[in-house]
Image (tube, rainbow, N blue to C red):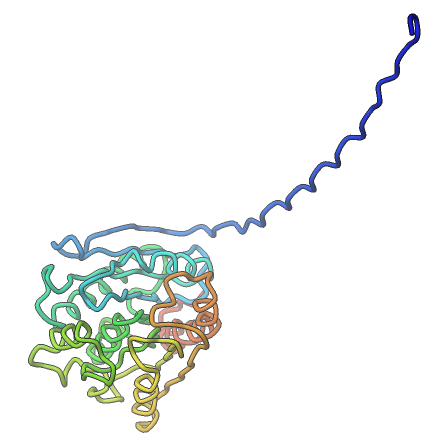
Length: 292
């Protein structure tokens, strides 16, 4: 109708979606970090080193990657090293030559890791960590390398291995039931003609440091009973060994520290490091240096 005002119907505004909560941010602690530093001439002879400003313990945690000695790289464990640094532990990832890429046998790999550890200790000492105390941690086949290195360093006056952690325990160079042809070939090449000197199950238990053995019950590469045999080998000789079989976990699980398998493992690793990554009390009293 002419002259009649119309009133537009005003639709109510749709409610705004609730704001997503801001993500929690945990500040990364101040740390000394060195990435891909060479310790030898081969491109794989590299290491990462992370030393937090506030140390839970002064010892260095040396991480050795898996891959059956023909795959993998030290960067596979970089996230774990950073996570340990957040928790106050100086950490280093140690790369090494591989079969078909500069290494002929396990002796070459073991020598690489020992040289890398020595260089990593020098680097970590610059930032206030220990220049001699180390705990080794190996993932998958890297656990065999770590255990063998630990045994060989047992008589070294410069490097004190105070503990060894095996994640996805590979404790022997003997072929086990269900061992694939690929793994059998890798085990034989690692052994060379010195199987009894490089296989942890054949080494004197007294040459091994305190052990933490973590194995998944869903490991299709290495059966859990082999980890249990290494544990029994150590305990029978009155050596310190702790074993845990993790439910629903496969062979390599420590690479992603925030995932369930690694989280379960870290619940055991952190207390172990808190005890064994510390320098011996008598030495700290002698030098006047205390763990911070």
